[in-house]
Amino acid sequence: MGTASAATLPGSGEEFHLHYLNVKHGLKAWLLTTDHKRIAWLYFFTTTFFFIVGGLAATFMRLNLISPQGALVEPETYNKLFTIHGTIMIFFFLAPAVPTVLGNFLIPMMVGARDVAFPKLNLLSWYIFITAGAIFLYSVISGGVDTGWTFYTPLSTMYLNTHVLSAAMAVFISGFSSILTGMNFIVTIHKMRAPGLTWFRLPLFIWSMYAASLIFVLAMPVIAITMALVMIERIFHVGIFDPALGGDPVLFQHLFWFFGHPEVYILILPSMGVISELMAAFSRRRVFGYGFVAFSSFAIGLISFIVWGHHMFVSSESAYAGIFFSAMSMAVAIPSAVKVFNWIATMYKGSVSFEAPMLFALGFIGLFTIGGLTGVFLASMGLDIFLHDTYFVVAHFHYIMVGGAIMGYLGGLHYWWPKMTGKMYPDYWARISALIIFVGFNLTFGPQFLLGVLGEPRRYATYPPNFQFLNIMSSAGASILAVGYLLPFIYFIWSAKYGAPAGPNPWGARGLEWETASPPPVHNFDVTPVVTHEAYDYEAVSETVAVS
Image 1 (cartoon, helix red, strand yellow):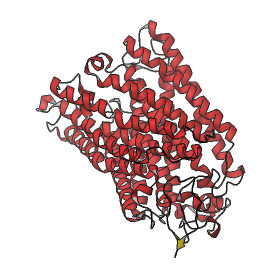
Image 2 (tube, rainbow, N blue to C red; image 1 turned 30 degrees about the horizontal axis):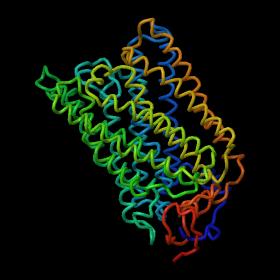
Image 3 (tube, one colour; image 1 turned 180 degrees about the horizontal axis):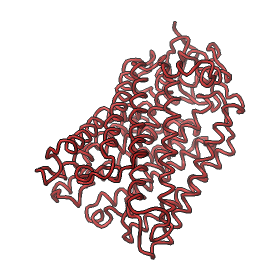
Image 4 (cartoon, rainbow, N blue to C red; image 1 turned 90 degrees about the vertical axis):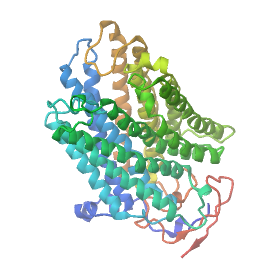
């Protein structure tokens, strides 16, 4: 990929402290910035904060489940804990993390642009996000919510003992942040690509982010409308979902899951894009079946809108509708499998190296594959009726969302951290972290498959004594997982000040983002890059071609 020579561009590792962390630039400069890289850092700090809050809620849950009768909190408090954990992790960490942090930082550079299409809207999306987060934290501090992250009626409409209104308002507002982000990315990718950067020369991260952005724009309005209807019914007692007022509670499930299942792919598609980048960089090969991997992102996004009914096999849904949703739910596994098999084929006969980002990528493949295969069981009506609302569902969901989405996010952070900061982290400790997270994750959620098959329902603060051993095992695994997550927090902070200078391209990777300084200058490129090679063309000799 021929671009402007990185040597002609200003910037060095020291610029990270001068441009990004130096308080002399003032808080106002940060709060009013339209630089996509600074906005990515704002999202990084805020999503990390919400990850810590959501993780603390999960910690109290696992501590409580050490004892069959509940070791720590009352059942009512436990209900609030899993609502806090689920809502924060879904709406305030998993959904925004990769798109707003890695996407914001990288998409303009990957397409050869100086910023996103709408810089001011980009900043506005962050303000909307933190407003929504603050409102949800208010609902937590004021007494909490006990509906679960799904806000199922009648819990969210008929009962007045928790702060549902403020929590629903938070989710309603957060949707607009995602819509603006998705719209910004779509326009940036369409209109601001560098000369020569055709669609089939784009990095696969861009393809995944484009598909996820389409889902943002199409699915987020649905959850916003649904939360608005909940608030209207709760305030004005209009019969929408409450059967006592002439409403239909199953309507809520249809609306929620029409958003909810595409939401799963909002969370996982960006991480899939990250894994494609890591597989190419650390196998030194173009991703096998590039076109199939690219279009599989769109296939996943399309099918995700016609599988919502598999969440409702035990509702009033007809058997014929169930057969359709079951078939479509199994069909969505095909484009996902295309990605996995093509990643493995990329490594075949490649010059594979096992730096920390690659270990996270391999962990992603292992955990995501288990999550995907267990999803096929839940897509089968007969099995789903038996496994519905058990810990089997909890384990499956976390293998996709935590084992998949977070593993991909961490892999991306470790890969692009030198580009973002200009500093290297200790690779030894990063590898240890990847190993600890992989082991801890399997110890945490592996036993929950067994608990689900044995019949333990989820969202209960107590359980029969014969389930205690597996619950203790899960809680012990969670403590190991927490150590794995804590390590990057420590060595990333350390590296920002004491890490060795990274240079423009420490991995010898391909892509426009590696052709500029680390960290990048404010406008990314002094001259507009011209792309002359395919993506991931590790065999070609880089040419230095630029236009004013």
